[in-house]
Image 1 (cartoon, one colour):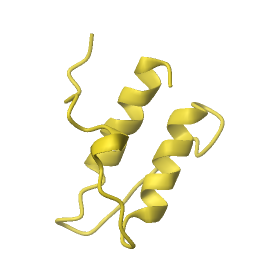
Image 2 (spheres, one colour; image 1 turned 90 degrees about the horizontal axis):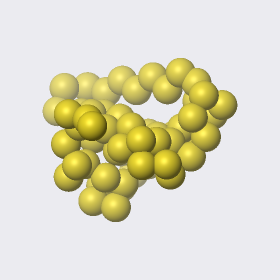
Image 3 (cartoon, helix red, strand yellow; image 1 turned 90 degrees about the vertical axis):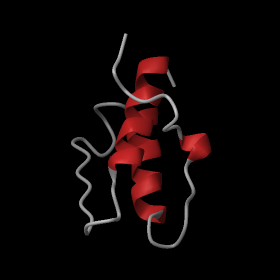
Image 4 (cartoon, one colour; image 1 turned 45 degrees about the horizontal axis):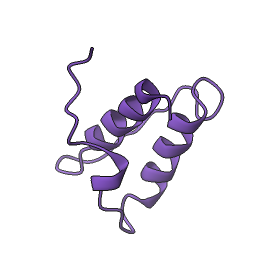
Length: 65
């Protein structure tokens, strides 16, 4: 169904002070697709990859929340 890596879920993501906002925004976007944070744009310095949050949000939306 998808080429997204299933290991990147919100449950497996470690949230800390540096990524708390990005994590909350990704969860909110997954809970309310096309209404909250639409579009969701995440930017970070090299090594602080927002990829995990983006994949987690996509997997959550595809699973129906």
